[in-house]
Image (cartoon, rainbow, N blue to C red):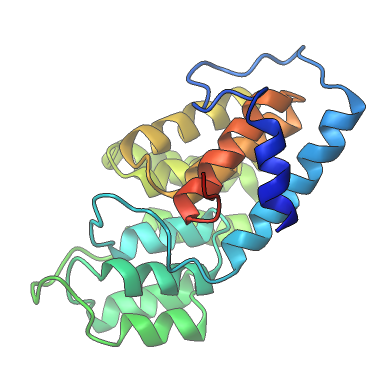
Length: 232
């Protein structure tokens, strides 16, 4: 596979660990590095859209409807989330209210089918999706990003240990080209849930937009490793 060969040729020059500090806005990249990075970002997006049943999620914690709604708001596809539910299961049994909320949040038919399949870790009833999250997602779909930001900041403040909420807020900041704020939220999302490929993929795109080629490639490689695409 071309992507694997491309990554192998970069190993001697690109650090294995992703960056842990804020991006440097003034850092430039040679034209050829930017071209290769564009290819890598494209392949990463394709890999996330494809079957990722081999993703390497160490803890395999079950997911919640709130996390799923937040990832949808952050741009993760319904098909990818459906596979995530199949792999990890739901934390609690979704109620009719939650299923309706997921439809409102933009869940695909595939995701709704999986949510109704009974693949749950507990028969207990969990909390519904926060209304502020649904409001933020709706505002984002209308490209009302300032209003979406306000709603998502509210829900993040109420549940700061939810990685998916930080991911969604980062996406809103990214739409407004507020790069420092987007980085802060993605750093939080990745710290809480380091094994989710989408967190590293979003960081890769952020570094790419900031012309920080080495860190973008490092994060993209980490995302591919989490997806089980790259083999050493």
